[in-house]
Length: 428
Image 1 (cartoon, rainbow, N blue to C red):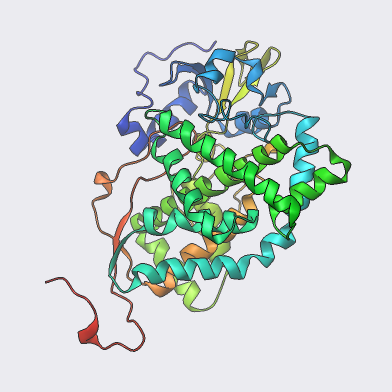
Image 2 (image 1 turned 180 degrees about the horizontal axis):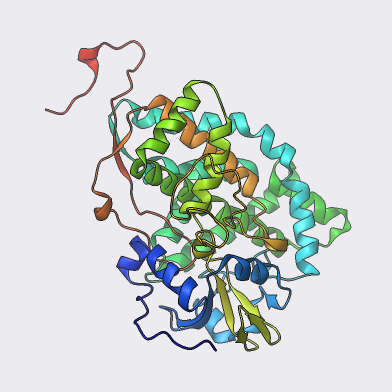
């Protein structure tokens, strides 16, 4: 174990830390790059903060994703993993299993979640983006989290899964309950997860009688063709695609907008390129926003199945390991000017979507939604601006994801076709 530095380690997991964890992560990278800590839940875990160590850990087969290798009680009580998933019998998804089961399930999901399908979905994402902006564009103000960043990926993933339009608001409500309760009481999360499972199982039964060209139908076809996908596995896979597919994108859009508000010179460069009809800066910009203040702060849980060494530190069997993506992606040993937002950054192998066999299968969809959201907002509402002090914004409590609770904005109201200036609502 490295010698302890003589000066104090910054506190972790406080509200001040949640608002800006990067100074604390910089201290850990320099002094205790593989750091054992007690999490707010009471679980003891190792935090891995350097880029090279993070890549090693993310790809190390000795670090299992299956909570059975840790404390059964910790998972049963929701202190590790996704709260409520065990009680709802939704364990058999890609974030909880290892090869060979992981290999089998990922292959099946990949068949239903192809790049061609995502590319063909682009017009629908743009339609959803414009529809949501239409709802507040004439008002001159909005909360970009609740009115835009949250519903966009929910409706998008519901469409991809094949959730009928009349059911999508229910999924939106249950998904909202899951993210609102991060870091707080878990009862609401558990109920939401059970509601989602019951709905998905019922939807799978309906789909069997009328298969379509959606992801759930694709999972059913794979199971029916001898690929051994059980009904519970299909429900669990649909659940994790919904869960991972919406919260990541909420935070990509919210954190991305917030970063652009705080770096107006970068935001103006992007707007200028969009006005010229260019896409290169938008493409590299999304990757830089994922690196600079990405939606996933810590990679999901891993558990040592045999003794291993990370960054010169021995990890005992059974110990949880959490790779801090936010820290690794600002490691000066890998990224020049690591604390600078540079939308044109070319050398950018960030870990925002993970690394290795558990690399985020929904990354192409998240990128598509992020590009559509930012480009359309900045084009349709060019003077979009933050309507609160950055210090007053609240970040959601939680361990894995990093995102704002709200993002109030103001802008010049978009003129509704067929109206005159006197018809535009104003505050008096």
